[in-house]
Image (cartoon, rainbow, N blue to C red; front, side):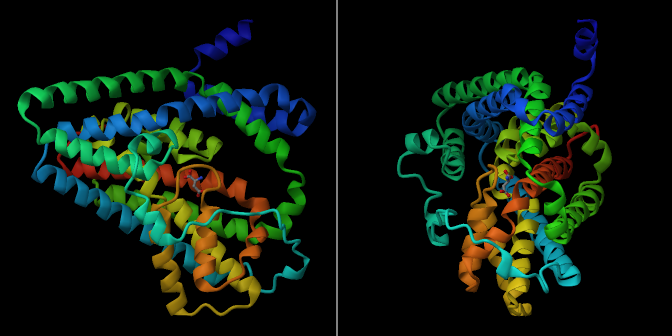
Length: 409
Ligand code: ASP
């Protein structure tokens, strides 16, 4: 009892760290008992998912009505999209370069890979991904967690509320501001449950890894290549951009958003990490709601640096294992397709697999070979999601600084 009381008195990030370590031990030593605790992770994820769509809708609309129409919106939009496209391109180049240097797939015996016929991944054609950004029914889009369509609608609504006459503009602005405040308050409550939720999620991931040793040895070099790319991007590229373009302190900011990053790691979902990211970037690093409400929800869906590294690395890895030669032209094609298709990826676990099948198809590589990376996908998903979320948060800082905001970082 005393121990519990002192645990509750600890700061949230210490509680999460302890939960994390305990979860790994529990997952290893009490595999059978995992079902008794993993429900906490499921409930935590459900709570996060429960708030994410209303939060995206209200934060973008309230962000836009507070920015107001006209020049400042266009400027913010341009900076945000410019940042996202540039960083994702850097990420893909790092991914491609590493796979070219390390060549993890060369000489791999793919005949021993049992192709799992049960994998059926729905693959919408890439043109459809873009057409579907425009919802044909906004209520359906909201109910089916269609992030891109909801963002599209929220952008339209925010822009046109700003153009309404004063009386009605005020009613709707107040409504969406209040709506946003409500969901941020619920977010604060959910965050308090993070240590229990993260414990439940990590226990399950650890217990589900059948054979760590085997996994690490057969796909180890590939895993290391991806993790190296992710580390280079997260700890060198993004901090350099934050430092020199944003004129901010990247590692202080990293420390400020650590609960968000641990949540991204544990949930493997950028969407689930969105509420925390908005809270910590605003409260700890001092970015205004005006900027976080615009950059972070949009980044959650369209900016996926870790995913971009992963997609390019997997495709090259599969090509190498197949013995297919990927020249400069093909690699430029991979870059363009990975960039375009990562915009349409939802921030949910294992969403990249869908995109990878699209890229493989375009390049004429066998889709079944995706089975090669399936055993390590979940683990790598944790790393890439953390980078995805970190990239969004850095964008908020860079854009805020460029707008002259006075931050704590
Ligand atoms: N899980 C990733 C995210 O939510 C997407 C992916 O790469 O599968 O950001």
